[in-house]
Amino acid sequence: MKKILLSEFNIEKIGSPKHILGTITSSSRRDILLLNWYEDIVSEKKICQFCVHTIFLIVISFWFKRVIWIRHNFKPHNHNNMIRYKILCYIITLVSYRKCCHRDNIDGYEYIPHPTYNIEPSNLIDNQITNDEHYDIIFGQIKKYKGIVEILNKWPKEKKLLIVGRSESLSLYNDIITVIEERGLDVCFINEFVDDNRLEQLIFNSRHVILPHLDKTMIVSGAFFHAASLGKPVLLHRGGFYDYLVKKFSFVSEIGSTNLDITSEQVIFELQKECDDDIILRRFKELISLNR
Image 1 (cartoon, rainbow, N blue to C red):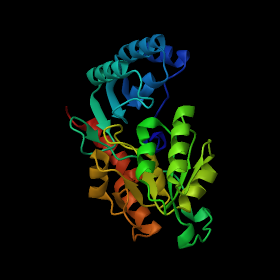
Image 2 (tube, helix red, strand yellow):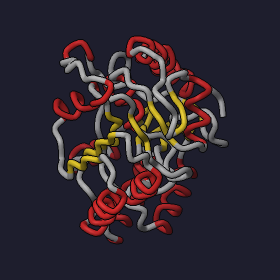
Image 3 (cartoon, helix red, strand yellow):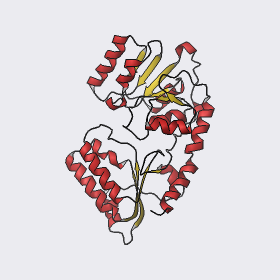
Image 4 (cartoon, one colour):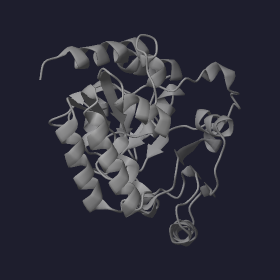
């Protein structure tokens, strides 16, 4: 998002004490404060840090003419601290001129498309995988709320599945391995951080990308845009995110669907048609110019 907006806006990241002091002692108010995923600070912050960040938000908002909030999730990533999360979202709502998100079916929020990933699939290697070797893939941080154990409990034994990402806990790792072994599934679990180059190669050589997230846990998933930027069809559960996607893209279907007959070029074309940088920039300009 920052790279897109830099083409026409002067953007500064607020963070250092010197920068904060310079902002609040300025003789004139700044134009826009953009809060991008600010609500998730409760995931890793202790109560004292949460209080500091919340007070900082209230104070710093007075030095900007407009505050725009881009919300990413319904719940914090670690699903802890829900009371703090609700408090913070309420305060952000109070100080915000615009509330936005990357879906157009969320009541009370303006829509701005999610940026694509700057990837060139032609730079990746086509390993010419045969039909018998084709696999589906789940990637990203392995967290309980993503519903991976639920997926494995229903996964067909004859289908290959690759899970890539570090588990958030030993107990979740054990739960995943137990289901794989007890059901005799053809599943490989790479329980480690994988660098971007290797991950993108694994995604590129897959058949489908699976989004196992349970409904009402997130607004959008970055994994979807990562997969689509590589030209991969995406399968996910029915729900709000699914409803948003199927209206816009033909390469999206339910988990359990058979091989989608669509080319990588078509996937990328459809994604760019909705989420091109120029479209996002134009939408942002509309958001800051609209009256309340």
